[in-house]
Amino acid sequence: MTTLTLCERELADYMLRMTGEKGSIALFSENGASFLEEHYTIDVTDGRGSIRANRPRALLLGIYDFLRRCGCRFLRPGKTGEVIPRVPLESIDVHAEVSPASRHRGITIEGAVSLENVLDLIEWAPKAGFNSYFIQFRTAFEFFDRWYSHAGNDLIPREPFSEEDAARFVRMIAEKVKERDMIFHAVGHGWTAACVGISADGWKGMDDDLTDRQRGMLAEIGGKRGFFNGIPLNTNLCYSNPAVRERMAEEVVSYAAAHPEVDVLHLWLADDSNNVCECAACAERRFSDWYVMMLNEIDRRLTALHIRTKICFLVYLDLYWAPETERIRNQDRFIMMFAPIFRSYAKPYDCSEAGEPLRYVRNKVVYPHTTAPYVRFLRDWQAQFQGDSFDFDYHLMWDINRDLGGEIIAEVLYRDIRALPVLGLNGFMSCQIQRAFYPNGLAFYVMGRALFDGQIGYEALREEYYRGAFGKHAPFAMRFYETLERTVPFSYFKEETDGKTALPLLREAQAFLRKTLSEFPADAEDDTRRESLEILRFTAENALRTAEVLILKEEGAPAGQVQEAAAARRRFFNENELRFQPYADGFYVNMITDGFIDAKEVGIYAE
Image 1 (spheres, helix red, strand yellow):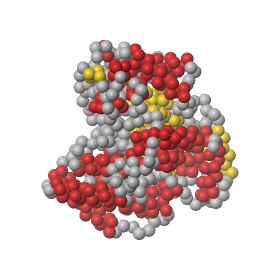
Image 2 (spheres, helix red, strand yellow):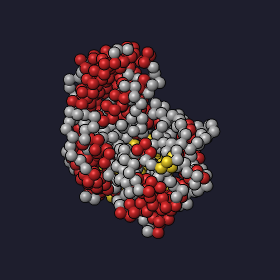
Image 3 (cartoon, helix red, strand yellow):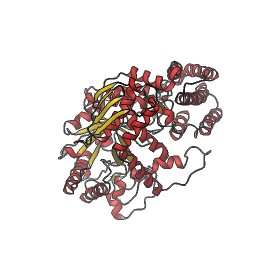
Image 4 (cartoon, one colour):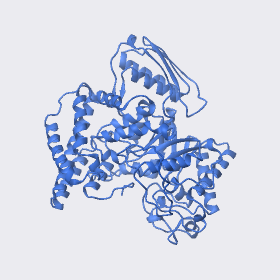
């Protein structure tokens, strides 16, 4: 199906549901001189008129914006995530000329997902204002396998799943993305392993059984060359070796040539930190200098083949430190991705440029959690690179399951989006769990709307979300999430509030949650509001069990009693996982919650 056909179908369907008539609104789309730019005009009076756009994706976005201005709300994927008012056709008057505030408005696959989760999310994404989708790795096997293996939930039998299944899924996802004329990002992780002939589809370990040629390509650390902590994906290469740089260029260019559907191809090096080559030759230059040398060679080869694919390079880990000697030559080819992964998500960006840059010590880096040092890193890169760029951030990856009320993370995310122009970044790509609608969908909704509309305030968005999701029960829902936020503090899960301070709050939460569940609203206006209340009820039930475990822990109960209560909480969640599967990522909920209860450091990687 073409995007224009999809536009016609969507407008007719929603108009029929909203007014009982299909209406008479003409749709016009140009091909668009720039694939990244979007602009549309809505001119509708008495239910008649037109929507015109500079490209098909912009037309689709314009249709959903028109519907939103008519009172529709797109709160989460699926029919029970929509609010469609009934209005007379002749009452519809919408006039607007729109260019979205941010160029890049994307979602990156993470967490544990089914194929249906991803397809439904892509269908919802432009309704919420997003224009890009990013498949990490070549097949995203890691994320699908987490779901189909039902990791962390032994109540659901494992389902057969293979690399071939994942590859087939990615083809279906790409088709769904292209049907919407969305910007398709791909790969990122896995290039270093591919260069030595190994398929790295996740963060799993592997025996260090290598040929001399393969071993010679790997980074030397502590006088040895091998997989870093036994994980190929986290292993850098010896980039001073011309053969290694040549192999990397061959891999990237070959992939780009074979995958014309990819608009933005990400070239990332190894994951993890303090794992770069220490050989004498590599030590002669900064890590980022070797990286830029490879970027320039890749551009040279792509240009020779007349391949227009954009290459996304990252400012991340050892690459935070900008190159000293090398410079990116063809800046139009590249998009810079700023990824401050170790920053705190309890506070928004500090855009000040004060302070000296952090000193780089090879393989002895301690990454800060405040945002100001990362802004300094960004400024150093921007002094050399004036091309396109976006923020790649992780608000809805881990901390969405530490912020039980969902309120702080939503406001921090909003304020970070409002800081993008000050930071000199042209948008935002969210690396996140896909099922980010638990404890509510506020942060996800705010993200899409704030990236699209540069003027709307946070409180207006918050009110819009709660009124849409809960209808007449919006005041109840707002009080619930506010109270949960206060009594089970995000700062406690971030270890910024100690247990002694948190204990009376947790006891208050316990009483509040019991009272909420005993007096729960019995009615709702429609299926969407009913489903929102069911998600809230599940949040309350799981939060109650979590609070009870934490009270035992902070009261100093025997470890066995704490673990018994923790197991009961996990069992309750797992028993209900399938019912709330589209909204809550059980793999991450359990990993984060159990990790905190056990006082286990749960960092970037799921173990």
